[in-house]
Length: 355
Image (cartoon, rainbow, N blue to C red; front, side, top):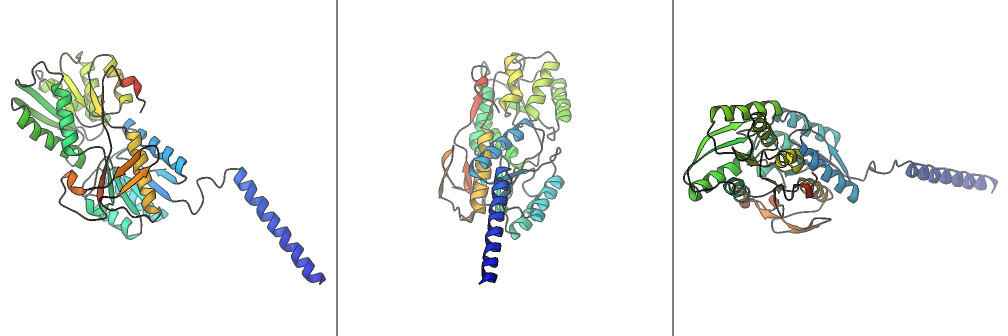
């Protein structure tokens, strides 16, 4: 009996010590964000250091904290296929549960993403898509029809007579970035139908590099001194183009500059009259939605075309077929969620937003 009592006492002591250690860990915050049963989503931007992508990460981190999963923000200052492949491979090696990526190429990441899928990692895209065979859901800011038309209309509404002859330039990041090219392709079709007197005099690329984009902006102004409008569907090209105009003493009365970028990156140009408007969507919401869906899938849930999901702080969203983006590829487990709204920023409303 004495031996049994000793063993019982030892068991009680060990149990109490374990409970005390657990309490201490919780008090020190060690259980928050590091539990083995929490999923990890790797949130990958095209590049780091850009206001648009940093705002997307703000939304992603807020959603993760609210819902109790982990988000690792992993990018590189240079938006290249090689850098993104390395980040995807790192996610596979570290045992991540899901990836949410804004791709720099529609096909350059295929092999790396297939390895991730083979390793059991869920793949979601946001902002810029990949080949839809290599992801489950694309969190899309708007279809080419929506965004291409929006770009043209933001320029047209600033013209005294948009049906008259206008010399217009396109300026964005790269000929290989799928989202921007799709918008511009539809926009050119829309221009042919609605504004046939517009002439697209040049299409230039800044490779998502601030210094190069500023140089390209200066070059457009120097090469086409009678340019009427420059449309920049890129969050690096637009502020660079506005700065190039300001450097040359030009304002919105001299040349129309519009496109897509975050309000925080463009506010000074709105306020000093360099530009009159620009557009975007709530990228913090887009980042939040991307990681929520990635985590939802990583938890073992299925999402098929036609399904709806009730997302905290955002509301109900629907998985649309890939055809809404113009893709031929269709599959039950591959679809698109389109953000519910987009915003045109002007001097009247820009201070209502902070991202």
